[in-house]
Structure formats: structure tokens, C-alpha cells
Image 1: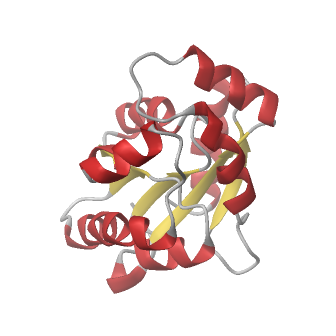
Image 2: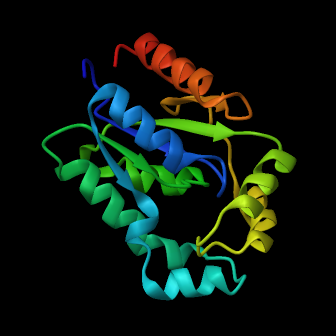
Length: 169
């Protein structure tokens, strides 16, 4: 990777395709993919599985772990993390992690359909409202861009790669 960007964070509400896109993008770019959900505590997973939204305190340790992984890796990473608030993105990008945020988005109807079709995931679909309510889109000055994931996967990947090229990554 060229320039100041070192890590790619795929962000967005649950069901937007962070894991699917992350694995495919990592394969295309020959980078390591970190599945952010694997770093939630058992308590957080139980809470979400019971339909209880996480609060800032619940997320803090999880975000710090992902930020530390991004900062300490010798190689660039692709990380899936909801990163719903700017303050969460600031934690991920602290300590020199040098992240670019790719906000994967689609209409609520598209996301709901995907969540209901998932099998064996701890996320309770009733939490989607709280995620959309919490979501703070990328602000002017944040390094990143938005991609509509209602499009077919190959088009989503092509757009992300093209946009990363625009950033000289």
C-alpha cells in the first residue's frame, strides 16, 4: 500500500456485508482479513443475541482491541467493524493505525432481508433499529467513502478497488 493509509476498515450496520466483502476484498488484494465480530466479548454477544443494544462502554474494549491490532500489525489489514460513530472510528484510527473507512450501506429493507436470511449469527434482527439510530455517516475530513452494497458483489468489489486506487492505496 502506498501513502499514509495502512488499514481498510469496512464499516456499517449489521447485515451490510462487512464479512462477505472483507473476505472477498482480502482475497483480491492479498491482505489479511480480521473479522471484528470475533473480538466481541461473550457478554456482548449474549447481550446482542438477547436483543439488547450495546452501549459505548460495552463497545470500548472491543474497539481498543481492534485498534491495537490495526496499529501493531506489520502488514496492512482489512478489518470488519461496525464503527457506527465518529468517536468509535477515532479509537480505531488512534495510535497511528492509519485507517481508511469504507462505509457499506444499503436501504433498511435490503439490510433487513439479509439479516433475516442469516443462519447461526448472534445478532438479533430487532437491534437493527438501534444500529441505524446510532450510525453517524462519515464526516467531511474523515478518510473514507461510501459504497452501496445493494449492488451485486462483483460490482461492490470493483467500486471499492477503484475508489482505493483513487486514494493511491
